[in-house]
Length: 63
Image (tube, rainbow, N blue to C red):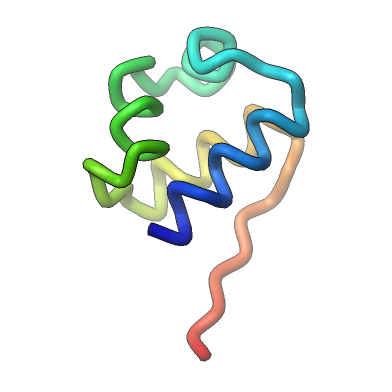
């Protein structure tokens, strides 16, 4: 669920719609939506593509 919240916040901060993020990242809009709703557990590759599309880098931590 943390990935969902982080993606939503980053997308809002970047002032992008789900459709815009999908176009920039090459990830389907329905996939973006499902990740943000916590209905899909994204792969590292997908998260990286989304982050890069927003001009961000992906950081993973295990606490």
